Length: 300
Image (cartoon, one colour):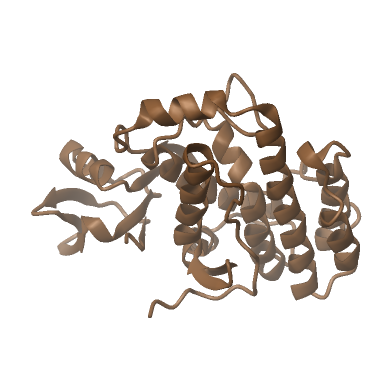
């Protein structure tokens, strides 16, 4: 199982040989087995990477992020044709009826609001019990739009009454950066399992190639929210390299899933694998994460 998340902040030359990723910085070279790599974040624009190395990472199912001059993720490379039954999955995605998708969306929003409540509880914030009750009353397809109502309560309790997701500040910069990392990993995993990522459960934008990733990320968002609330005391300031590295490191944190602790990266794979079973084997339960206090996952 791939478990290593590589963060590159300095000019480097990256190549591949004998199934190893070779990262040369100045006169120092490091070799990492490609099969161990889950994600690579190329944060510095002075990095040169060979086409062969990119191809080997893609073959292994790794996700590679690239940053712009502001050191923010601007592109992501996902593997292509890593699943041998893509047509079967595409037909399953198209053929499943609306009630199926409405039931799935209910599970996703219920898990999201439940994790938002857990986030507030960990931080000793008000309104956690109110969100718990809201999570119990989600209808099929969330006809009552409780997701939006819960978000209004949640973010004001988390970051203050005047907070808005539209504000240009450090809190939102952290949230956007962290969401982008997890979204990219979800999209990569969906591709690996043969999904057409533009066909989704709820999101249906014709301009978005990753609607399905935007569906599945919802219960994972409170992980980024919790980190941001615990580490950002002031709304002013810059998104420093240290903060970005910590946000990228969230992929190695633990969540609960079906009574077991897993890293976020592996939890995402379990979520997508269960979604595949729902489409192909017509099962009815989607494996989603349960938020716990942030701690790096320990592999046994």
